[in-house]
Length: 146
Image (tube, rainbow, N blue to C red; front, side, top):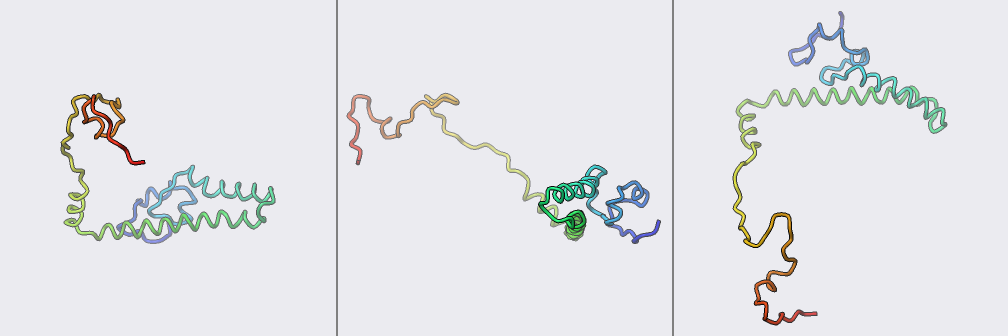
């Protein structure tokens, strides 16, 4: 099999390369590994969509060529961005990775919540402001500003 020399960071072995869909092999994808159905949608699906749009006279017939090419460019660009991300992540020292993992661990603990003796879970006992509830039942209500 002729092609580019695979480097150490490549994700697929040479034996597995022959079983990849033609679309992924033609684009030379290394990090994005679309399956057969996704490759079908990327190519044949965009050709069918462009043909339907052209038949409906919403776009010119050039869209049948341009739309699949634009999708292929976007897929290849996504693969190139994934390559940059993987390479930069590989350069992070192990000590820095451990520090990051420690920072990202969730904090587990207990929060102190004051218990109100007359409250019932899920039920609103009173919608009055706290001032009115604290006054004696016989006391007149305080004057409210208008």
